[in-house]
Image (cartoon, rainbow, N blue to C red; front, side, top):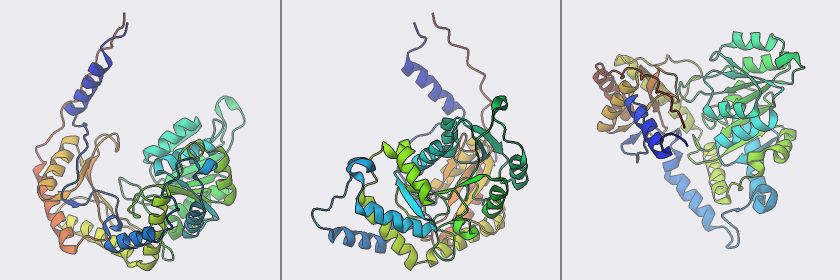
Length: 410
């Protein structure tokens, strides 16, 4: 006979999260959006909306808007091929493959490529989707300190012996390009050089940089650092600067052919619907026609950092390149919650980010700047943030809870 009923146990766990200021709940957006990843403001762009509606109105009546089967059955269409060719050209690679989400793209890519005999060097602050993918791959994962090029070089130079002394497989270096919680940038050119020198495979999650960086196409940091053809695979998403949803993997044609055959999350998932793909094409056209949007969002983010520092708020120093994510690290969970509540009351939607999304003791406000924000909004947000941070001075986290007594069945 088991212990407490399951729902009672779940209520206890939820209550414990609340005591630690770690409870979450869904909340309808309110206030000016400084929270979402809609960096270019395309989710609300009127010209993009008109373009998409015109494209849909011009479609033949018999053309489907959904593809209710996997790509290997009847879900593959000429539109999928067209979009993937366009995405490959956008990223500067031979080929691309669509996925329903960035999480699924990372999961599918790494579990298809990496196995128990392989070694993977993974940045300590990589996204949860990369962490979960490597756990499922059952490889030997080496966590390297965040953006520590020296540590990466030392690990790559070390013999990659498998457990028990058996011959090892391949070595992979896996990193984000623009890190989603800190807003800092991986040295992809250095990583590509090290991977080539030591015979490793470089895998880059370019999700938060896609659409923002790169002078020619704005395709991301892989373009900016010139590593498009030196990376084994590049993952990008439509749920950030594109203002949509979905994702894709870009890389050599052989890689994409292999994923079509061996990537279980791709093989056994319903195809990305054509309705979304028409929107992707509209965004790609908009990005090409309005490159000034990415320059504007980066300039606005730099302005916010300057204004925050003028108001006495700690935030990361400017560097080159630097993106639209501006973290204000407060430390305690309750401080972050109080500051977010103060900003909401002032009309700004900025959310508190707490463990396990970030490390314990590094709870923060994560401010996301968009191209359609105005300069006066940026300045007012900086002032409101300073007031909100000041208001958290007396907010302390509760004492760490004692370990619960074990439940004995019988």
